Structures are given as C-alpha cells and as structure tokens.
Length: 205
Image 1 (cartoon, rainbow, N blue to C red):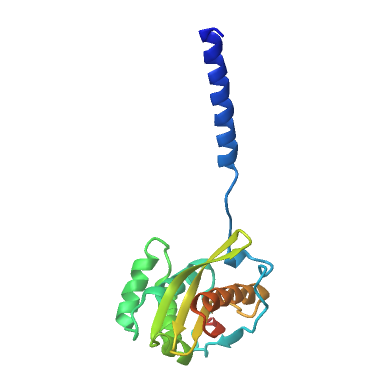
Image 2 (image 1 turned 30 degrees about the horizontal axis):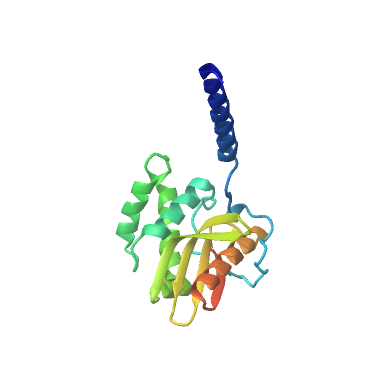
C-alpha cells in the first residue's frame, strides 16, 4: 500500500474514532432534577406523613404582607445565615447586605426581619437550632435508578434519638408538591443516618 493510502486510512480511522467519542460525550451520563420540580415521588420513596405547622401571626401591620420571590429569598437567606440566639441588630445588618441591589423598601425589609425573629422564637425551630447536630441549607442528593434528584434542606437537626427535617414556606405550605419535596428529603436523611425522621413544613407567612 502506498504511503498516501496509508495516511488516508489512518485519517479515516482517527475521524471515525473522534466521531464516536463526540457522540458518547454528547450523551449525558446522569439525568439531574431539582427536588422542588418533582411531580411524582421517585421509585423507592413512600408517600409518608408530613406535618404542616403555621407560625402564629405577629402584630398586625398596615397594608398587605409582603409576598413574592425577593421577599421569600431574603427571608430564607436570613434564616440560613443569621446567628442563633437571634440578635435583631445583627439580623437587620444582614438583611441590608442581602437586600443590596434589589431596591426593597425599608418597611418591607423590616417585615422580613420581624418574620425571621418570630420564626426563630417558634418552639420547634428554637429547639432544633439547639440540638446535638444542626445543619442549615443542607445539600442532598437522591439516586433513583440513575436519575439524580438534588435539593437543599432548610433545616435538619438531631436531638439524640431522631432527626427533624424542616422546610420553611413563605406562602401556603399545605400543597402536594411540598409534601413530595419533604418526603424525598426525609428518605435521604433516613437512609443516610439510619434513624427515625420527623417531617415538617412550617408556614411562616
């Protein structure tokens, strides 16, 4: 075989190998879904009991209570990062930092701070934050036959005998999608920690 023919053969083999690698590389190895987007419980997770609790209403304020994504994001950020026991001045400073750029009215920011202070005072939250083990904004993953479900638990704690998985909601909390979300969280903790798990959605606003 001539040298040009040998070179063409080698090129064709290289191109075929490259095309195969490109095809394999374009095929996802894992399918990843957010737990908050799950519309059906993954295989292996039972529809278990989820408690729906509601924070007692605070002092009435004029106008409609704040709603929306910005308010919810600020409240969740403060609940995740504010010190416990709560220091109102510290929470207000933290709220100012997190709110920079969102142009949130000062009154709305104060309502978020009030809500966080009251949430920390809730018996379940206060007890959880003083437990033997406490994790806030705890990232988790569940593998269901190669499909990975990823999420973040607002608060998970261990009191010496069992775990509590707690998810905050700044709107109505008694919805099937939230029950599914927390049920998945609970199964992850149960399998990982091999201990009883209490599942709670706390509706804080």
